[in-house]
Length: 329
Image (tube, rainbow, N blue to C red):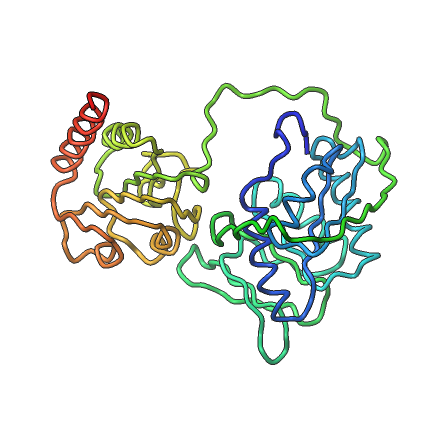
């Protein structure tokens, strides 16, 4: 982890996994161990303990300052071979999806990728790992009974971030791994910050999402206007992504991302089960659809039956008027 770039913080999925690991560990009468890799990142250990870790294993090395598959794989595998963990969770981020398979292959165990559910079998005590299969049309629950550790990468946004307990105490253990520059096949010559705006919809508090009912790519300009006045971001269903109306990294659903915003406004989305699985844990859901019997209407806190091209402009005007009245007051 580059401490200067990331300002000593975690992606939210790291803390989400701690909460779920705490739940799994309690069922197995085990402990939660967080592994912290990087360079000069020791100040982050308290945050991991406050969010559920019993112990933090710190691997601090100059060659871990920036992520490389070789260095991080070597560090985690050496640790796993010595500590013999029962379960390893990794966030299904771009880095996690690169790292997880490499670690699993080197440890000669299985990996269930992109999980959306985790539990424990009451009889066997094996980890039950649930993920979408066959294009998101079914949910498969997978076990790894014959190999250890049991490993899964877990989709961001699936679980809640546990509340921090600042009185909680834990142990910090330093683990030394001899990582040399020669161990790293890919060299980082330079890091260039992209000028393109990168948005992670799993981090958003307000999302305005569009589906097939939007009708065309230009219709998303209207949704963006609504999102802007609310201080939110735009997302879409799989149908909208497949039609080329919005980018893949903004797709909500089983084959996209799981989100839990404070406000989710679904415009022209019918609510197939694959989409509902990715957003139904939102705190407040508003659905705008011509079809009052659309599945999404049954999960919405506020269901508006109507043409989104009539409803959304009215919403925008009302919000702008409300903001102006607040400024006057």
